[in-house]
Length: 215
Image (cartoon, rainbow, N blue to C red; front, top):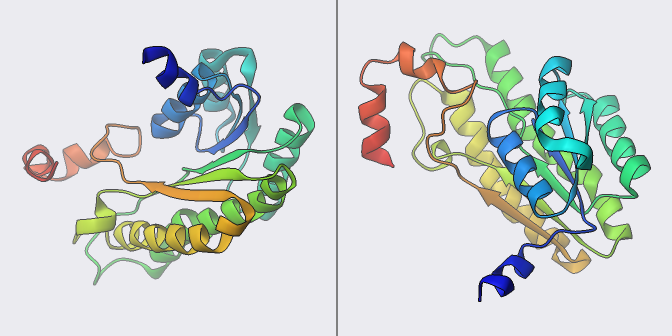
């Protein structure tokens, strides 16, 4: 039974692209892929973090400096995967940002920035993976929502809205691309301490207790 379960998760010969793969949840996913035998391309904006992540991932991975809100960077990300490993089988649209504050005083620029990174870029990342996957007979797209996709937050309005949108985007893409043998699924992590989430613990009194109550 154990051997059978290992076979189910064998990704030997598969190529995965993970945005925001140089830290936090993205790096954890990249490690899982490498452990299952996949070749992995991690994309991140910070070259130092990219290099540190590669030191953990080993020779099965490469890194591309990329801002997922920039089309030229996304093009470079997929071109690197195609050149190094011959295509793309899995795309994980994990990169995201958060901006906090009361909605009545939140600058519109903060709203635009979060929606661009967390929703528009997720759509673009998936959309631009489609031709590579279709050429290989199918693939997997994984989007990353959040517990805030479901119950939201009064101090994280753009983040909550973007992650709720990711859930509906995922459903739409799954329906559209089923005919191409491309499965699209969304994961909704609970509270995970990462470089992005850790500051929330110091900003909000009682934050830990609230998280425990909701997870």
